[in-house]
Image (tube, rainbow, N blue to C red; front, side, top):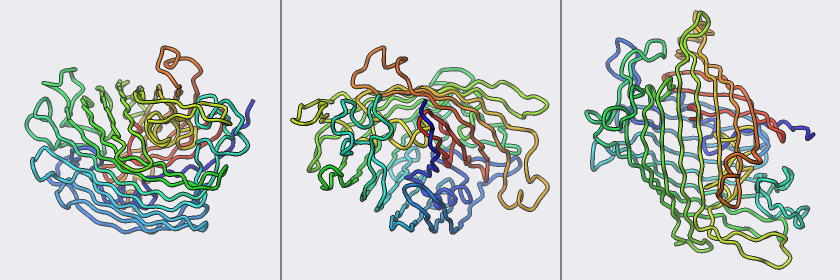
Length: 444
């Protein structure tokens, strides 16, 4: 049996400062909605600047300054930014926004994001570790050794914009910006879906476009040369969100189908295509004398790289894939959202399948309810989530991908509804490691 090692896994792209800024300032997160306390008519705007510090394998000891606010350029918009510097001379700068109004239509919304970083100790699961050059299982593959990675310096530039058009059907027919009314964080009116599965009557349907540029230049140990993991692509999606309360769903469903294309316009890159499908379902299990809410949340995701080609190279024991997404995107598992018990991008391949189940409960008792801390942080509720996950990657798409040779993990999250935004801190364990993950928003 493999003995798991313990890792504090604070992940990018959202640094601690940006996370704190969103939590302390935001009344909305990545969806077009406003959350109002019962009796209120306007969202609460505000700005905040916070220092922070944390430790991780990649960063060592890091310090930074993050800030953000809501109310500009629209009442439902959020702007944030953060700068981080570490003791191992890594640094990162993040700026972004959520729910910026589009200029061409009141149904158009834009989430811009930019990140610039230099890492001195980045863990990368791609071929290049001299100790595994003869291994038939390439780094990041489903059967690869958990030690088949390397740590090297890397420069990372990441630019993207999520562009959403809310269709005038279902819940989005009257107003593209939905308003929820809550009592101590629990929905009392303004459900956006979940009553029936019919995009014309219930839920919100959107067309999404995501232009995406990323250039991560990593030094490969086996030859000492920098290698550019680079992409300039466009993702198009159709999303049907039929959940009752997007920040914390208790019933309904979620469906999203996406296609991503890189035409190979950049130097050192080949064209590639990737398709994916995500499904979610939520069941309200009712209230008890202990819990205000019980929810069973299910999620499934699968994807396939259509353009994947493999080339034989002398002295390399496995075929080298070309016309494929970089290791950090496409069919990738591990990190903040999928297979949380494994490091970021631990598994990457041509095809992927993933399943998750969460049992989420909100107790009646709320910590700090009678203290000044409660008023300061505006904590509406806290949630305990027990979760299990299963997933795998493969070099082909067949029935085996969906159920054979799966990797598993399990864990527990504590989630808090602070200023109408969800923040989660949890721990997940697998046969390879134990990861502590902090992030905003529900994982699905």
